[in-house]
Length: 99
Length: 164
Image (tube, rainbow over all chains, first blue to last red; front, side):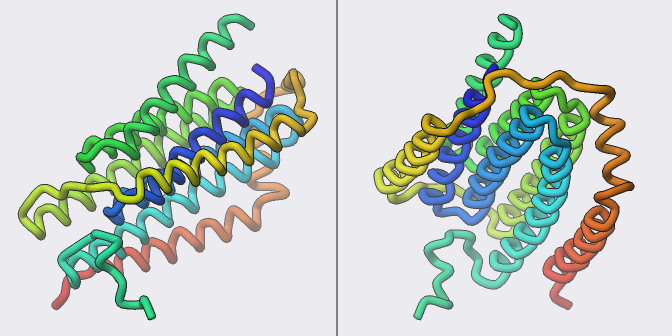
């Protein structure tokens, strides 16, 4: 398959993830959308690495995967703390910082 | 070549279908199960791109780790509140419009850009090359990553500690 096919697939997944981030009310649902977007970016990185013959993209993907896992762990810990304090994980209800 | 096209189309259908299910199902738990399917499909895309090591990492960290953590988080929050969390969506039309616009923008760049049609051949084992680079030129970023993981671990522990 040409490079364009992989990039188009990644762009579609990214758009779907963006849709999830924009439309979900639940904080965990928003996190899942972010996961999808990060995965799409990883597909792009690996595809570019493979088609340009440069190893950098694959190494970068390893780093982004590890950082994403750390992000999810901290993000979900924050969600649980918010849930303890506010008894909700609806993003619309968490507007204390709104001016 | 044809086998590769069939595999790519099959994986693409599974990936896009499960991704859509992740953002559209009302049940949060089903959403996570579909996310697991999408993550495994992404791993298969890595496999199609001759990166079997990344496929393993994807399975272990994403499909294994992230999905487990999210399931735990949902179990904990549901247990705390004592009822199943429904998840509603809002601004469906605006979100769809913006997502389609972003995709159209990216696709516009893809159409204009001169993209490689065929991939170059691999010289040697890619996994060996990745391993050598990780302890060679990329050793410092790798160590920094270890520090980041420890900090994230401590941060998550701090947030999730008990009240007393």
